[in-house]
Length: 120
Image (cartoon, rainbow, N blue to C red; front, side):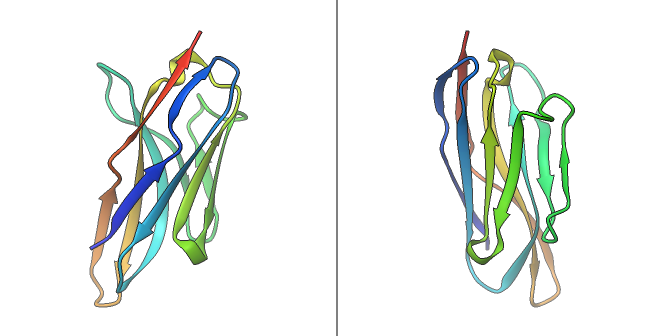
């Protein structure tokens, strides 16, 4: 079983920065793609950014040029550097990871979420 632990959320003023981290723990698997999603109040969860094990990256249009996703494969950790934050970035941010087990099975896991609030 994969466990994802997120950290780094908080309250920041518009134009500020935050860095989110998400570490995957467990055994018997290799992490393939990792991603960040977010869900604002009253809205559906949306994809923010993804990164494959080979570091192929994609961003939502709304965060391009402001957010940077990266990962440390040795630590099974994914990061989201968020710059030039806007009030509309306020949401609960969720980490997501795809795990390929050595047994040949596959799983997709979510973190518990971390609140990011951007004040105007």
